Image 1 (tube, helix red, strand yellow):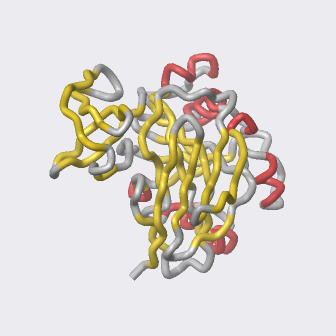
Image 2: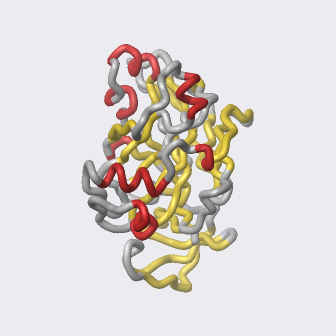
Length: 253
């Protein structure tokens, strides 16, 4: 099932994507809901970020080839950081290239959307806390990351956390190619089965540090092939089984 959050008229709504239409949902996507007969054309809706997270938890260096690319040691445990909810950006939204930045990078990632409040979750029960999965782009001001020595500023500008286009509730984690496509050219091409720390382990590890709430997002790390974006570019993040997240890049005014 693909759960989408969107605007039709002026009212934010949730719906289920069925082919070229969206059927509205009544109820709580994190609990009980029903799918109604009210439909909208998928081409005509305005996408919103699929959830309103209290936080976005990033995982760094979770593919060996990316750690090597960054000339950093493969970690013994997950390296985590936070992005604020103000960084969230929906499908078709515009990534703002800050005036402070000299190099802005894309990072294709699989995102996990949390379904229920999670604290100290055992690995074997992690699946109970997952609503589904999204494509995500861990947009990073690479020059500021290197300058600061820590990652908060470089990864936290408004619009630096695109995710979507919807939440896919059923994804085969054993085999899902992931790609970054810049202006129609594939720049990253890997498979999420190459994660160093898998999805259950990440939920366990992060939930021992902080409480995760419904709608929170965990981005699971990027493979090698990161690179710069410029104003005027279109960056697409594709995870097979979910779909394709597309965003344009614009200069800050």
